[in-house]
Image 1 (cartoon, rainbow, N blue to C red):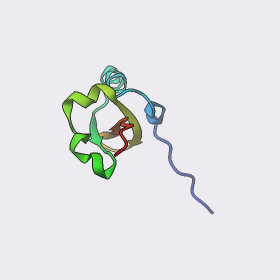
Image 2: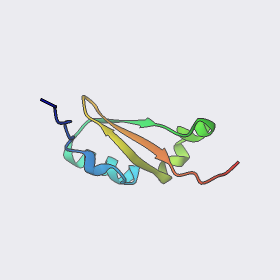
Image 3: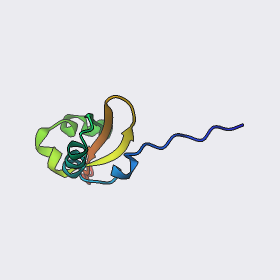
Image 4: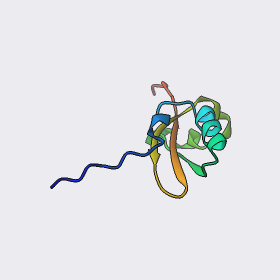
Length: 78
């Protein structure tokens, strides 16, 4: 019998701006961490604190603590 993947209660946060997702989790008293990701050539900017304003949640990993995988939209073409 195939097993259905578990759906996190927080998956609705995917696509939310990081600031809004953090606000919701703080209101609910849920501990979380932010995990940054970026394209290989964009790694330097991935953890830049200034970029958090433009960051979006692209995945949610359940577990203690909840992990928000975030990335900044970057349309730069080199």
